[in-house]
Image 1 (cartoon, helix red, strand yellow):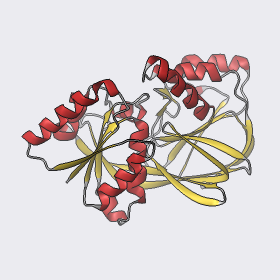
Image 2: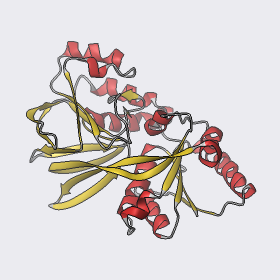
Image 3: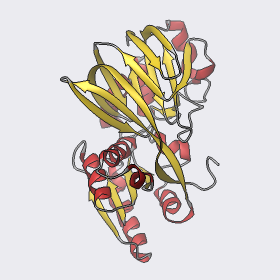
Length: 314
């Protein structure tokens, strides 16, 4: 059974047309399906869990990175075995602001192409899933993600990009404008970082991105070597850059050259612990989370499958 989750607020002007096109395709194929339409933040998490617990082994998400992240979170929290979960496959028709996950796989806003991949020409690719464990009001919470988690300037950029969206609509360039408005005023905070591979350091953190995939913030290539099937995170950490260093980094945001800048620290890990007793603001694929440290991020290898373009990421 195919379960479909649709976020009508992502790319709302094309919502009706895309839904009608999809439903006609499925009826022509005599494909049984059920669908859900989100109405509020977190709704897709509820749907993801409900659909797989009710027997859906294929999921299709029409929405942005945040909608997909919620669906993945719901699947990972579902009352099913790890073996059952690993056999669940999903696809995405990118309809959001950043579409960073779709960008990695070569999936664009061309919904007809994305649906052709999912229904006809794609192949199933086993993928890792990340888990962020944090604490709020003394209670442990687990939040699952497919692409990345950001701290420091990353969530601040998301806040500003969301404001810009109300004026010019949902475009990936919103994140760049948000970055430009935040980059010179954001302040570094002290963090202690420990990994399962023996890395341990204390430093001031200007920004940090823990990536399962390489892109964040509407196409910014923060972790160009990230591979969502290799069983590890790629992490980018920037301490307290000078004004001149910030200017030198801006032209390299989108082409993968950030890792070559001397003030950018890169490492890989299967587990990352962030030690601090203070307040932290996280950005999980465009979704903002407030918590108190410490927190931990773990990779879950081969957790799910995705239908991806057959000629991409061989």
